[in-house]
Length: 319
Image (cartoon, rainbow, N blue to C red; front, side, top):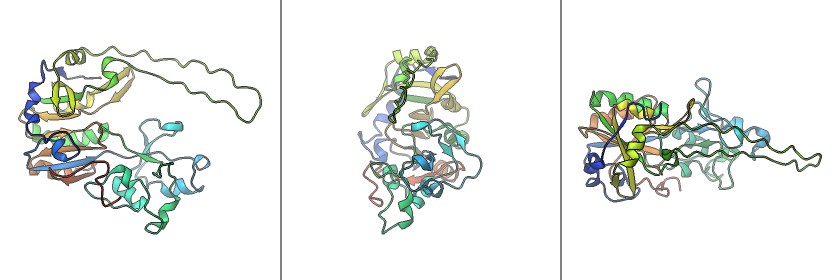
């Protein structure tokens, strides 16, 4: 599945139009998405919920139950968290995270700010949330630099009528380690500190055989990059929905998806950016397109402007 439907472009000039429409390298919308579009939206990356067993949580025994989202249906595992916990998707949004931490949802909210429970005097009910040593609600997380497949599919459904059958450019940041076919696997062992016989030595875990790097990816790696302020990208082309095939085909049955870091149609009527350090995806386009994004089921999106700052400490409402 990796890179299926995509082909490498021989050079990066197809993205040169973006360079002159960015305001340098920084954390504002205009430093991330080309300027000049009629409207912009920020799509928040979905929340992973890692319900910690009460016996392992630093919070009171009922904390995990109190902090659990109201599920709309059975949770869907999406991976494995630290300590073997399984993330659940149960309809928990950033706005609902704010409800539990006593923070204020708004278009420029930052994940670190809203997952820091408000002081006791402001939100006494939030003191029961289990927190990390840094004071962050430890049961929730979001991915940076990629829009997970369900949300990406919902977004592509919105973009399809505005795109038609024309080809799209799919850009991928050159710094991902898996691009060259390298993979690493770590095995952890522990010793019983309570005495008794020593544990048996750990057995080496079977290492999956990596899938060879696809030919289109090898060609993209050999081609000149699309160079933008602070980032260089491999450039590929293909249908809109080929965005769902981008990622690391680790083994024959293990696919690790990665949404395009930049995506735009040949007519340049919209541009989508998942900056590698952002926990949200930005898009610029027509007023009608952005209205459709904001109204789309399956997406948590807010309207933003070119000058809005999405830096780590820019959330002044919650800091």
